[in-house]
Image (cartoon, rainbow over all chains, first blue to last red):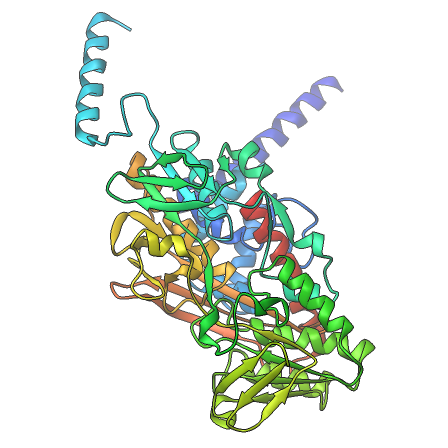
Length: 106
Length: 421
């Protein structure tokens, strides 16, 4: 029983590490410094503290969730004039840099 | 450290000091940035330079007030949508979280050659780079008969603070069925939709407690920001209460009389029971003293926000000619981040990224009826050029307008946290 638990833990850890690696691998051209710089544009509206009233918090958002949402604004599938405008000028390098920086934020 | 390595290190340090050849950057001393003005431009610049340099740059913020009341959202205080205390902020976060040296004094003058800022106390502070973000001064004389003395009778309330409290008091105390006269400023000025949001908030007050009151807008312009949206909102929420009279209709305000509360125009003489007069504006005085202005405003290098007249001075926000960006808190915050990145790069060699500018202005027309306009900008050799934008549409769904208002509350929380935390 004890060995089964250890084996299961190893498998779960391997899966998580591998998934995290896969997430990082997708971030082509990502630069955390650039992400931090770009993030300055986000925090004019997205409060990094507080409850996120009126505008949701983005700190703590998963990388994949962040990219999916930004792309939905970029293609105008998701409504919001401000976010569509923000997403419009974010290229792959910018989106991935932001995603990398966000993933490093606690 | 081995003997050889120590010798190499000393040699390199000597070479670096020689290369910089700036008197204030002696070996071991940190490069120093002084920021004048603790508003949306200055507070943001001070924070980002201090935060991102991680102690490699000494940042001093010179701001006379210990508590800063934002101009943005002061209209919502007029309409009872915000408490006055909620638009006041202190500099604790900048000092404690980011190590910004707060100097609560007036900056009296700038000695460009010596790179020093002279303070009201008689002290002076040296700088390697200076950021000037003083906001606006009012040109009282631009409206014949208006003056600093008349501002208590007809508050401009265009720099937040007690003037806004006074105006609200006068609006609430206006006689039943009386007339309020609003005189907006001519272009260019701080917060283009501001006068019309102010009218909306005053109308909101009148609707509650003085429903037969009238508001007359004597505009020195023939059109204004978000005009279609405001006009639609006024018709919907305050029918018959607000009359906007363009410059070509009234022919110009010839004279105002603060004692009799009269406004003389070619069309008629209007008698007010309460009024707000917002005169023409110019860059804050310290920008003139530093010699970085050309007329009323300060030309800048679009890619960095450096003053065209002095590469060691950066001018942010309302004081700058940042065409095509409007003079707004959001614009100043955006420009501050571009300048901070450029200053850090020039003082520490850190990466300087392609400048990105943005602005969005939210306005409240009535309860849960928010509207907005926004744009992206990029720096060209000549200007900060608009690349894309949006504006709320007339006839929008009430749920969208409510969401826009709630978004503006989120933005206020976000930008003030960005500036002061």
